[in-house]
Image (cartoon, rainbow, N blue to C red; front, side):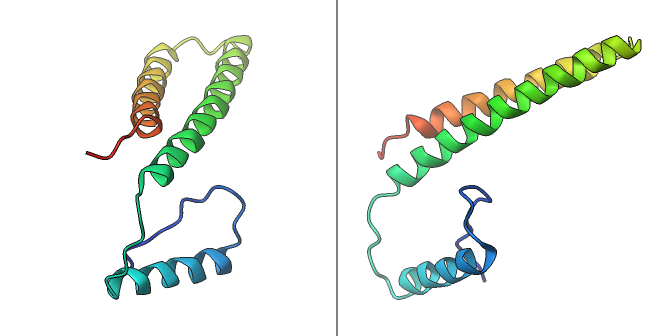
Length: 101
């Protein structure tokens, strides 16, 4: 059972990520203390913020393109995308500001 997975960011080749995942799983299974997860959680939040900004830019370009093409019935879909981005941004903020309790 895989307990550890790397997010597909940072340019780590699949084979290297699989090797790291297996090594961390072995360490967890042996009961080895791996230290605080706070830095990793915050790093994921930062990566997510970057992805959100890139997605926002792509959505803006899509909306502009659709408007130029005369597609007028996209308001509901656009509002759903904006809601999704807001939720994802809140999640990323929580991860970036995470503190261990």
